[in-house]
Structures are given as structure tokens and as C-alpha cells.
Image (tube, rainbow over all chains, first blue to last red; front, side):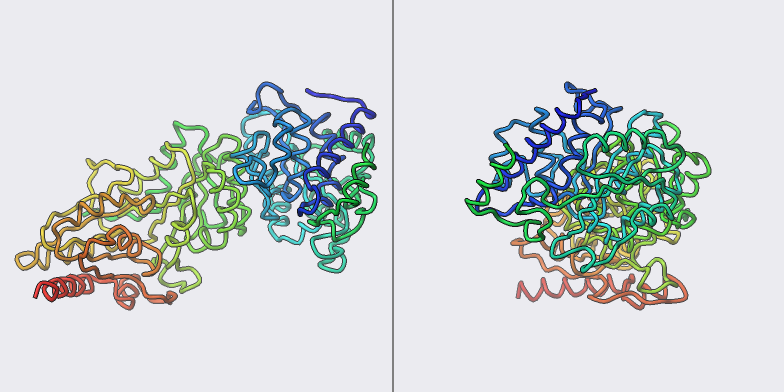
Length: 272
Length: 315
């Protein structure tokens, strides 16, 4: 168990964002927006909530975090480096030939990655499989799955939503990173997906909402999810894409965009 | 000779394995009464998971179970297991070599009544092209048992394609399954026929019909990937011609794999396979096999053709 207080978590979240910006670098493309929108949620999970053992990454009763939105790989890499699971030096080799940090996460190459995601819509099903298997083993392990709001366009998300409620798994928590943007435009313009909590509730889930950038509230909502029985929990986390990098906040072009030298310097300065 | 369909062998073997290995779980997509996963469901209800009519979720849930140390067998009709869930198999299962066992049931034209929507003529091509995926096509019920057992006992993503209808036995209880090794079921020095599934028996019948005139070797290739190319080459060594017979598209299956293995050897080769076309409905399986020219006569004709090619090459 690795637990931290709120101000320390806020400090870690800032460092994670700095790592993300460094990996995006200057003049190279990188998924800045969605990585930053998930950063606070990931920080609370990795540094406070997940039951794990530093010396045994494969501990069978560990809690799992599945990033279904695999394009937020930079957020995972940034956190894994802060946890000491991967060497910080690896961050400089992201998306390079022979590196362990692929454009989308590869559990075969990178320790601490729990599943290969990146083709959107599959992570919730994978998480459900983990949840069912862990229940069968009477393991206390809990499974957390971060899903993008754009990702909910994928029909498979709803197949999984239906099945998770059918099987009444209460060791599964889906967190929807509701940043209102997808790859090329606002979610409302590409494919409307409003009232996400009501949709999950209609499928039979318990639903909760949270400010996805308020560390204290994220802790509270995750603790509340622990108490739900006989059904899975969906937390709709209201977020801002690019959060923490002021000029990129809410801007679709930073989904997988490049930073100029000036932008890079400004981003780093804002995260010191 | 006994006749038992391969899907019954699949279900019964899983029940047997489930009794000794608690990690085996079985998943279906509302077709357990066809795949015979229902036999496992009856015996071990807590370890059988019906995912409903949702093959994408079926495969990804199996992936999650494999990540938790389970040995999931996920089945649907071959056309859906390989096609509808291709991306799920590719992206998170094969890429990470997860221990997921996929059963493509009612493969080929064997679901004769339902027509092209339910007939997989290209599943082997799809599964062979996927990195890390192992591909099996058992010849009869006994070999299905042996391969299912192999799948349960060995790590990695694997695909088995099985037939809906009863098939005559061509192996015996004494036979053992050797992974990757093509099995010579009948020896012969003139022509070598490589086949899998339902076409093996037709090849054996063709060889019998021709006995006394042409000496035909029949090889059952039930491990389609990885294909033991050296074993294929040595089985064909000295033959005057090669015939490949399969209930699958001529593109991307055993025909392609054997051609690749035999490149540069200069031995004439002919195919008995489904041309580049979809299936169709018929009143029974045999009628459909005849329509697609997957018959003993077709194998005999192909043998005759490669023999002629060989003779022309010598003159």
C-alpha cells in the first residue's frame, strides 16, 4: 500500500504532467491532451488507491489499473517513472526504435503495464474479464478502468457495460475521463454522448460524478465506490483536455499535436 | 468407423480437463448448444460465462481472464470468432501472447443450411496472418480431443477450427498428437496429398481408388501454423506431384502455406479448395461439398493433373 496526502499527490500530479510535456518534446507529435486530462485520476490511483507491492509487480491480489484509452500512454509512462517501476531515462526514449515505451502501451516490453490497449473500446471488456476471474479466485483485488468519453463511440464499451451489470461485478470501477474532446473535434460535434451517467445507470451500474482534477474529491469518490455491492461502478470525471498546460486546455489540436520551442518552454514553466 | 462430431469432442474434453484444472474457464456467445460449451456449463456452471451475442466483448473478456491466470476457451462460429473479433484477438491477445484459446466452431461450409453469413471460408487465412497465433484444424473427433488437451496444457494464443458435422474417424485412440508435425496417414511414393479436416478422408478415399495405378501418400496437416516447412518438404521428397486439399479458400490457407514451403523444389502442385468466393445454403453438407468441388473425385482429378504436369516436364 502506497498512500500519500493531498498536497503530496498534487505535487506528484504536477511532476507527471511535466514528464508528459518532456516526452511530447519539441516538434514531435504526442498525445498531450488526453494524457493531461487523466493525470490527476491516475495520480490518485497509482500513488494512493491501488493496493500493490513495490517488490512484486506480479502479486496476484494487486489492484489493476487498465488504461482503456491507450493513447494516454504518456500519462502511464510518466507515473510508472515516478513510481520507480521504469527508469526515468526511458522517458527520453519514448517512441524510439528498440525502446520499451511504444506509442501505445505494450505490456510485453514495459513493466507495470497491465494490458495492451490502444485500439479503443476494449479495455472495459478486459477489465471485466479480470474482475470475473478475481471474483472466482475470491481475491480482494479491485479493477479500475479509465475510458475516454470519445472512446464511448465504440460499441464494445456498451457490450461490456451490459455484461458487467449482468454479472453483478462489484470489484470493477470504470472512470470516464469526460474531457468533451475527441481526436478531431468536440464530442458533441463528432458523436454526441450526453448523460453518460444516466446511460450507465440504465445498464444497471451505480454511477458517481467527480471533478476529475480535484485530488481530494477523487479520493472521496473512489472510497465511496468501494462500498457499492452487487454492481459495477461508473465514475464520470469531469475534466479538461490538456489540463495544466494553459494554452492547450480545451484545444482539440493538442490531442496528438506538436509543441513549438516557445510552447514547450511555456508549458514547462507553468508546471514548475 | 465411429462418427462423432468434433464439437462434442471439444465440449467433452473441456469437461474432462475442467475436473483437474480449476483455471480452465469456458466462454460462449449465446451458441453454447452449438459449440457444446454447454457440456462444461452443466458440469461447472460457475466457470462458464455466456457473454451473449457479443463476440468482441467475448474475446476481450477472455483476455482479461488470461491476464488473471485463467485458461479461457472462448468459442463461437468460426466466421464470428475469427472475423467479428479479429481486432480484439490482434490488439490485446496476440500482441501480448495472452493465453487465450479460441474455438472456431461450425467452420468451413459445415453449417450448410445457414449460408455464407455463417460459413467461414477464410478463417485460417485470417488467423495464420496474425503474429503469435497458433492455428489448428483437427481431422476427427479423437484429434480434436488431443489438440484441445494440448491447448490447455501449453501457453499462448491458439485457434482451433472444428467441424459441425460428424466426421469419420481416421485416427485411432492409440495415436498421439505431436505439435507441428504433419502425420503421414497413408504412405505412397508417387504423389503426396496434404490435407486437413474433412478433406483428409476424401484424400484417403482417392488414394484407395487409385491404388494399383498411382501410389498416393496422404498427410494430415493439423497444425497449420507454425507450419513445419521442413517436414512438408521431406514428406513430399521424391514425389512426382503434390496436391493440397482443404475446405477453405484457396487464398491464405494450407494451399498457400504448402506452396510457400515447397518454393524452389520444382514439384508440380495442384489445389482442391474453395475458390475466391463465399459459401451458400444447401440441404446437407455433402451436397455443398460437391457444389464447391471438395470431393474424392476432385482429389483424383488433381492427382491426375499433377502427374501429367510431371510427365510433360520430363518429356
